[in-house]
Image (cartoon, rainbow, N blue to C red):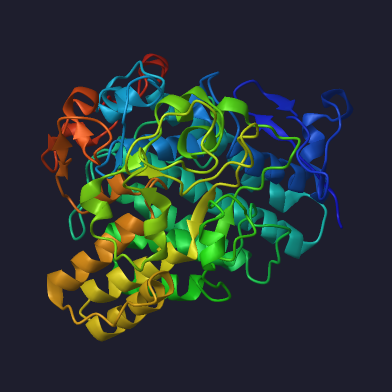
Length: 498
């Protein structure tokens, strides 16, 4: 198989850095002193190496913080702000201040430093985009590198504008402050584009990415192909309320992908080879993630303090909406205390409704190939977009394909209007539990965050002493993350969020 090198370009330092070995199968590395910065963009293999550095950066540890285990860590922060993923204990405090709606509103917290992490990635991506056309090599290979870089740039800005700006209002002017859309390599601070401008640029990058990635056959699912770019643009269209575009793109993105089997569901959503994965990190055996892996916090079987003392649970309110014949109901254990669950670490505490959806490699190996986009989400995007655009029969048909796969007893929905949309949204909450969609969905839909509160832990309810916040009205400044103080201090053009 063709081998590629992996390089991470650190724009802030102006240096070329090489991480730990990335793959025995398709990547190879060489020491820093054997590669000059200019060499990366003089050959197509150098450009591929830089792109593979971006793939690797999706699960790097950032800021020397366990809770910054790559961008899956960011998805954990997003999920813990929501309604459906709850703490059973405060024995482990990782993510606890996010759960309490504190850290995202603190400009000095580690959580908001994901702003810096995303812009660091964008800086590296821009080096690829701005240099790739001038190197010697196959035009097709240059297109494939550039297409992936453009999709990454769009994804990173999409994450930024969803978190650090007020929500996009479908049909509105969206002249509120967004985030700086970085397209050039510069050390100068930039002002914030409007939300409307950011989304225009995101869509332009994704449209170009789709064109460039036509015909690209990737080495594995950590690479971004045309279907990934289409799925990303479908996500964006859903936020913007562009129902026709969302449905069309989602329909195109799902071509060639199949649903997983019941056995694959129970395997723990950890393998990039899962047939449902459009885009998933590929973590090799020599890329040990230790205690900063997503699976070190969200699995049930890895032997970490977090999992032994504070396993996470689904809310009973959502669990009760899942049909008894639905394979996904088996992810959670409403009577976990009375059961001897397999694979729980030695001395691990059990709480009712605890999750087994995500599974680490073993009790001593926290690796897992995090699924950034799965085909199930694409079906749900298509169904929601069709329902909201009045194509209810088509929406029910699309929903049926997914729901029937999960629940053999499911029958074609007879719901119409808001009831149909609500059914799709419940399916979305169940399907994407723990995958970083719950809170951003509430924000895009302008819904309040309402947690069901109970008096004691382990009953499938949020304990008010742990979560602190159980009811946040829709809209307002609490739904917008604070920009890191370091950015405010260094960039005179940046305006802080209220």
